[in-house]
Image 1 (cartoon, one colour):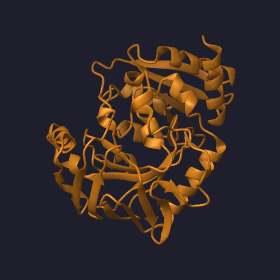
Image 2 (cartoon, helix red, strand yellow):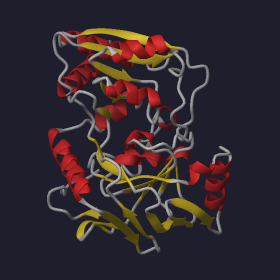
Image 3 (tube, rainbow, N blue to C red):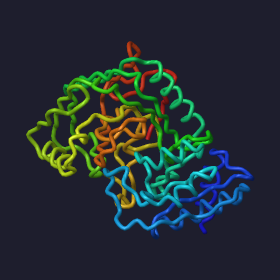
Image 4 (cartoon, rainbow, N blue to C red):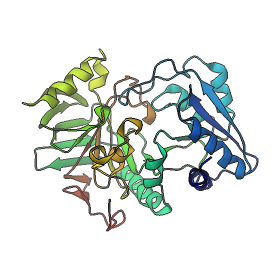
Length: 345
């Protein structure tokens, strides 16, 4: 076992408060992430926890943009086992699933880990990142309206207050709390029927489902929380519309979560420079400092009822964002003094 991997995972589980007397279950599928699973178990053991690997058969691997479909569905014995743990390290991808909600409701803390080691190391969380993300969460909880704009023509307003706010800073030590290692943002959901305006995707914005950058402008017209029109002269508009339509589910056009990135270690340009992109997830894209994380699709994670399998994360650059009358971002830069850092990737 690589000593550097073991050290990093031990530091991560220390941040998560793993200690003697706890049970840590590492959830995997087939032969995926086997080395990381073994290292996490060794790290948990070093901290005094009881640990084991629960391995399930996947059958078919989901694409990046497909959420809430996983091999735990219908496996009640496995679900009961996970609900009895102190902490679950999820290497399968339970996000946006009813099963994950049940596990959290049982008081189990859940840590999703889907990135290869080089990304985990690059974006390793800090207590200061947690502070800034929790500040963002608090401001979102108090706000009743979120608006973001761009020089390209984006102008959209979210009415807030119906749904909770979730923070992601890369570790979890609170019972029943979920997080994603690594990450670095806070987000919520607009009220049902309470999102209206236009979103204009520009070259350099990100299509996470395809691990690629937008090449040509795309305009999405949104009324009462639903995308009612997608237009653009280039291929990107056709690509987005065709992808959503392939799910044959009108709920895929629903506006999903909204937030902004605060991880100064995350790289907007990661897709262009990585030599290991096929093995990577998209946490660099979701977390990079100053992005507006606009998304379409499910909202189960926030307590909603939309469980469509189509999830489109669309991190956007060079946007300005306000919570009520408080400006958070200006042209893609974090200007709120409590969240700002001077050096970024």
